[in-house]
Length: 77
Image (cartoon, rainbow, N blue to C red; front, side, top):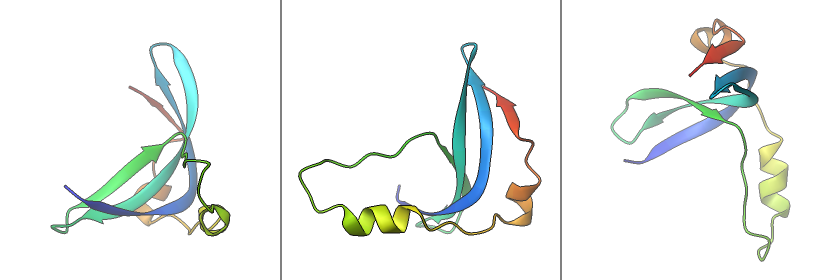
């Protein structure tokens, strides 16, 4: 499966195993058109490449859709 996602300004707190952590909510869709919400706590790239464009694009965030904006700020997994 391939998914394409865009970063939003929405950040939620997740809890798993008694540990809280922040995740940015990303929105997108699969290659077959299924809409998805992705909760990403961290993103990393290998240091041995030119990361200047990556770092610039990582700062780009859009307002969340209505469905994402309505999500509660805290989730328990």
